[in-house]
View: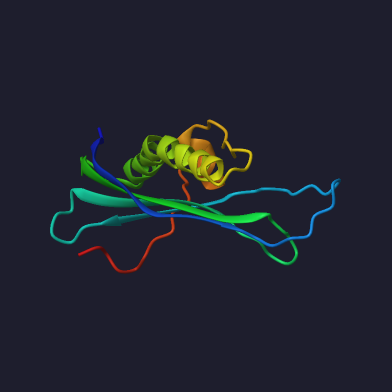
Amino acid sequence: MIDYSLKALTADELMFKVNPIKATPDMKFEIKPFFSRQIRQANENPKINIVVLECKIEHKDDSPKPFNLTARFVGVFEVENMNTDEDKRTFAINATETMFPYLRAAVTNLTADALINPLTLPVVPGSTLFPDDRAPGGYTLSVDPKVVN
């Protein structure tokens, strides 16, 4: 059975920027955050796994947003007994569940500190944040080909 513990959590990047958009009183913006996750294993100690969880909201010409926002957290986990792909899937989902409340709070605080209506992300289980996590035997994982040194 997989066993893990969070050893450290750091806000790697917190950014908020207002976009100069001429909005009419009846204009509505669709704010859809983009989430990404990377999990890497440390070279010097294979029990150490680095998890990067990020939330981005970006203005694009085809999808205008009143602001850009980036919140990226890095978690350091000590993991034991992660031997199979199912163990890796379980760890990815559980690490997401562990870190998501901090990411969620950061998004709310960034928007509130910018003196706009606070954006509160929904409370979701870790297995539903990334669509592929919902399917048995699958999980969404952006892997950097270089491992952390």
